[in-house]
Image (cartoon, rainbow, N blue to C red):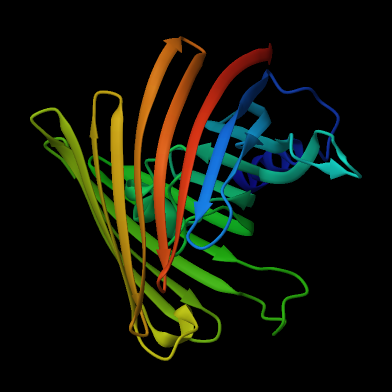
Length: 309
């Protein structure tokens, strides 16, 4: 046991950049994602221009440290081509998308840092199918900055648990959020259930299912939040339905928030030009309490290798 703990400490130190040795396997890749953006809010002026859609650099590492253990790490930094200075636009790094170090072995995987938490992995991810037009209505549909997560699997069963602990938050809680999730895969179908509990007693429950019928990919994600989690005076229920066929995809999300509904309809198509190059086209209709916005995107995605990969 002592030997495993020592190896674990070394792995976390290496993947977090705290020690000098170069990892045995290191890759640096990039992904350029830029295209045209059209927005047309009701009652306002239409806007058409060129926009950045999550361009990024990704640095990942892994090293066999013996005893069946592997040290792992990832740094993913966003690049924004829309940064404005005066009347000119300049690109630059705009945010940390993911930064985590971890340890993987027969017991599962432990990661610490900025990453997706357990509820997203087991529930929300099944409805997050659009390149850009997902996650406008759902809960727990983004990366979290300060997370310790464990995940594992056995046969068709998968499970995950995570805690979020942000420094300097309003209530100065030791733990801000605890999430548990479980999944099961059978006969080409995947099912998931999860719970997310805030330190101030807010709770979110979720169920999800995804699979294929006659070559058509289908998924459904149901989220039910109480008033503390949702920040409203009534329960908030969010349902997302998705479908995919060949390069086409679509999703419909509807939320009932205190009697005022909000929804997101996204239809899209992915055109695979080459192994590392594609374009996607999306048309999106957002409705929040009667305020409607139409959004169109035509984005070029080009991936490239810098080191390893």
